[in-house]
Image (cartoon, rainbow, N blue to C red; front, side):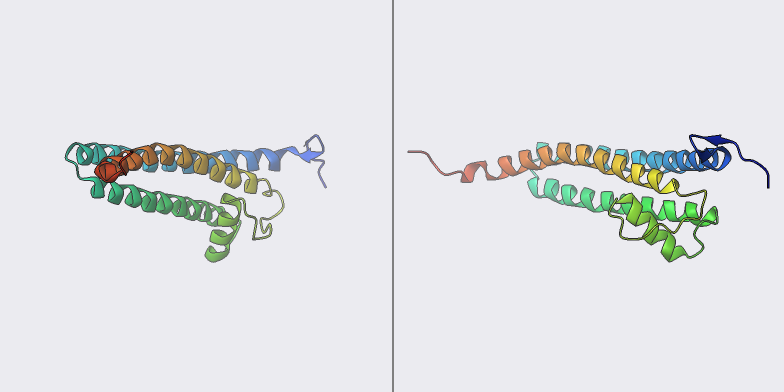
Length: 165
């Protein structure tokens, strides 16, 4: 048996391998997330600006809820991307198990036990980091969208405000 290089008691080569593939997967998923969410927010802003100018407040509401739907699809797609990544690397052979494990890590709920083989255990951290970053990014975008929704709501119902005596 050959001696392994160790760093803080951890085998160095498997650790470097895990970190490399974790960063690669995280980068790919975050680029996907950024591209998708940027497209949705730019479309939302363009459409709602035009709708507000035309007094089409119900369309602002429609675009708001549509954007939420498509953002949810982006997050589901990211879980699927991670599961494909795990499957291609040969770490989880069963596609359904790969989706469940990826979703468990991505959402940081942890409802699936660690099924990664030895030497790949820290990959779960990268999946979780991706989910945390993506969900935080989505939250900031949704706050901006909520402001447009509130503006449309106030403009639509301003004439129905109770009169003060």
